[in-house]
Length: 260
Image 1 (cartoon, rainbow, N blue to C red):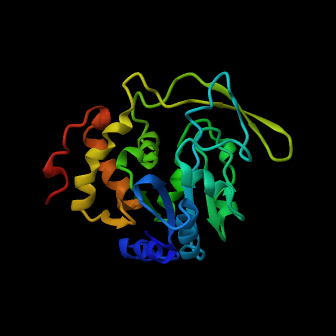
Image 2 (cartoon, rainbow, N blue to C red):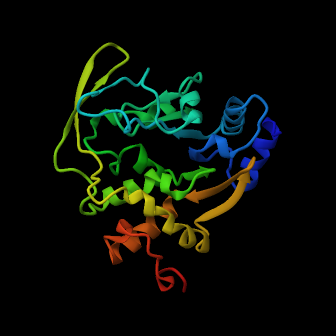
């Protein structure tokens, strides 16, 4: 059974620095047995990252829709796992106001990081919290989950206006603010007529590891991957320039695109 110090050691060993900006996609069940469960894993991340910025996705795309269309940042649960839902309840954790692709952040500049997300009318625009990962040279940790969870690649595709990624129409969503106001937030959604293209994002694993954009390791029992957001975006962009339809299938990336 793992304890908090074991988890902290594994965070260090995979390459996270205490002052990093770190976003964590997570599968708690992959970590294995931990003293006091998921809360200990969060304790470890928050203690180790207290001088940096720690971010968890707190998405609600699975439940927010035309009928259930009011997003309350204070009360709406995340659809992306137990760690994200527990993180939301922690002291000094601040959640963004994006109605489908919110994040929660902990750190000295958490308030500034999440501010203004109610402005955006698409899921992951360039100057949202997702684009800020690039600007901050952040790291993205896939804790026991694959690159199919990689919202950041959704964002990179959106920045480059890849066809058939966003709906032409808007859902009429609303945001219920903590002060009791309601903000109208019409929002384009991810286009799914081609299926879920994120299921093909794991084709980037070999290129990311080969180019050292990603490093493999373990946190508890969870096979994990730590990625450099800047390198990930730049390499993915170079591939999309060659083939904008790259993620419409799971065919391997040609070796000559990244092996020189």
